[in-house]
Image (cartoon, rainbow, N blue to C red; front, side):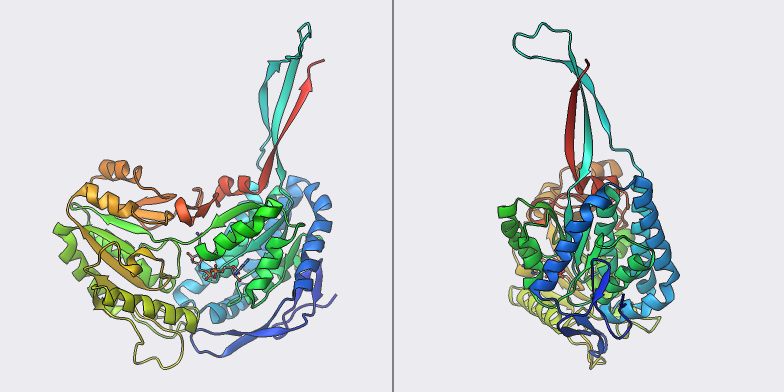
Length: 490
Ligand code: NAD
């Protein structure tokens, strides 16, 4: 069996390293240099991957929990052993700054696989109370016993975005395999090389052929072909709302099971009694955490008018001093965004805010000391109203917009006036009140006085932000079908 090498990447299909018909260049967002040539899948290659996953399903779904747990643990351990060779590749293709590259892009992938190695051992069987049999004319005396069990869904397509490529894949492959599904992984076109390295790790630790398949490609048609396949039972998708809508529609004829983790426009509701140090630090993660390329970023600040000027000043002071530039420089906090196309989109959204009357308090467009690379510096829009385009729509870049409110009910209404519902935040020193407000926010996750996440919580969105939940045992249940089994007592 051939293997992919650092310079020659291949598809991983049915336990074989398949030389692709074509390749495309993966570009370093910081230097615009080519990092490597990734396989550019054809529809035939995709179908081969789906067929391999289908062929492997019967065997894998019959394995014991221990066997599945052991495979995930071995993969996580091996991934960590290769940490030092993985960081440069993944950092180059994602543009992640050195301060985050190891923890966010490499270790988090292993943490997710380790977590599902543990959760694979969970007992999901749910014995139910017996009920009397109720056949017409039956003389009675019979009880019906029953159990609800969880079965794997089948072949699961894992389609992922570019921001945290390998942890994104691990967060799908982990629970899918733990539950007994087989997978076809299709990572984002911008940074697929780390995911091919993950396939190599599964291969090295002896994953049975076809249990994990990875195909990469530059064209949306490749993802679409996977979704359209009648041999795929479930699509676990993370990405934009627009593509999510297409997958929802395309999956209907084959009644796909769907996990949809889509966009966000997180409101940070800052009440009049908030600790502004905490609020400003949390909000500034939109700039300091992977250049705002995070669906959970608190990008829409909804602040009590009494604290508005003070908060804008504090945020501006932070935004102006954050070092932006080469991700390899250990002092850099803000690196590039993923591509020239994404930089243009972010710039045009800042421009749309300006035209609509927002004040560009800090303007990160085209930092002059950076001639190459796809950079947008921290940007702060103030004097916003909630109807402005960059306040309503996800930007997925280092841009924070601030909207003042007069009374708390208005603040809650503004926070909820969004088609998204992924992650909101409440900042107040009166935590019982913050808790009561959190319960009124129409979104899947709320942080009170923190932008940190608890990895065991069910993660997902209300409204346009998605369907279903990932993470922890909730995420694992998503990759199962409930089956009821009933029997007579005699
Ligand atoms: P995207 O929707 O453009 O692409 C995501 C994936 O879908 C890629 O692999 C892409 O090739 C594939 N794809 C494109 N068209 C397809 C089609 N018709 N059928 C099937 N697959 C198709 O997203 P992106 O630009 O890579 O990532 C940014 C988006 O991801 C943002 O909206 C962000 O909020 C979202 N995101 C959400 C979460 C979450 O957990 N909710 C996490 C990270 C990112």
